[in-house]
Length: 327
Image (cartoon, rainbow, N blue to C red; front, side, top):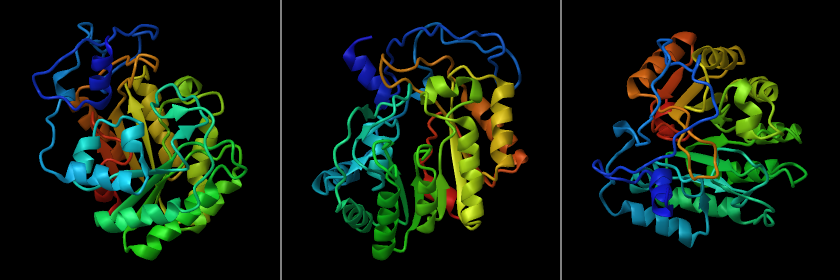
């Protein structure tokens, strides 16, 4: 696949009639990798992106306005750095997910397009710049995420705390944090919750069998669950949220068990979306899940007790986050 095709695949800013070849996936057994109904799925043997993963470019000038404001204020977004397929739609609606603590991550996750390596020093004025952007964009719900900073003694917890307070001082918006796991400094979670965000989000990403392969050797499935429980113990008023990428080779039983684990640990909100390979060096897509299966999974999740569920091919953890956060 040439560089232009990789770029198109990773951003999905393509028009309805455009197609391009994708690599045929191998390495995961098809046995037991099933849809909601339990049947063995049909793989995308043709190597073409399914029709439901194509959408039109948004119209209007707000896309450029948002991008220009972020550049002026020297702010990073996960939209750009992770090559989110919804970037242009969100920017055109004057919204974005702010990514603090720099744009270089210390974790080698197999799915994520964010740069990895040795991060630069923190910028002390970044919280104020995030707050300024929230004001000028007129945001009613602000989502703050970050790279993972295992190099920092507190894993970046204090910077999260200061950013939440800065936004709250300048706006009346609700605030959602999408944090790393703080697995190397677990008290960091306590500091973030002291800022009392309305929503605390930490993504499960995938099922236990695939966890280390997808999220890297430092990740811990049991701690991810405990982290969500700990938020509730620290502040029961904070809504907890998590999300999974589908299409990495998980089975139906594994997925449903994972959802049951999340509910057992008090997770309120759930997002389910299609994993899309952001480039040739990242994990391959094992299966593209049709929209009707996402719909059925969403209904199952609601019956399991999740308060809010967003389930669909283009769903991401912060996509239309305000709709989910508003009661």
